Image 1 (cartoon, rainbow, N blue to C red):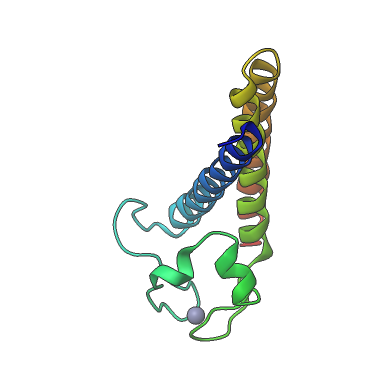
Image 2 (cartoon, rainbow, N blue to C red):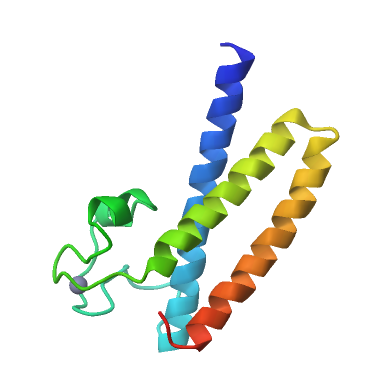
Length: 133
Ligand SMILES: [Zn+2]
């Protein structure tokens, strides 16, 4: 396998990992706000309460396929969900790219990414506190 294919694979895996973490972080904050346990219970629509299926839980893809609406009741899904998944995905893809090439980009990209993750987490938390989610 060529170095380019390995690099592309690493970046895609980094993006997927980041998108999953971004989605999980948003779910954690959302459940914390409503008083639900973040560790128990399946994901569900906040409007109709329908339990989401596996295909509804694929970060970024589910949002785009369903055009930002709940598949069961048609309620709009806040666009911060997509933003969070894309931002975390991009940050982790960048970090994975940096880690793949190690020195010196690796250490710089990890520092930048950790800072970006903290900033985004603070921003998302701020949005939630303003009841926009
Ligand atoms: Zn719904």
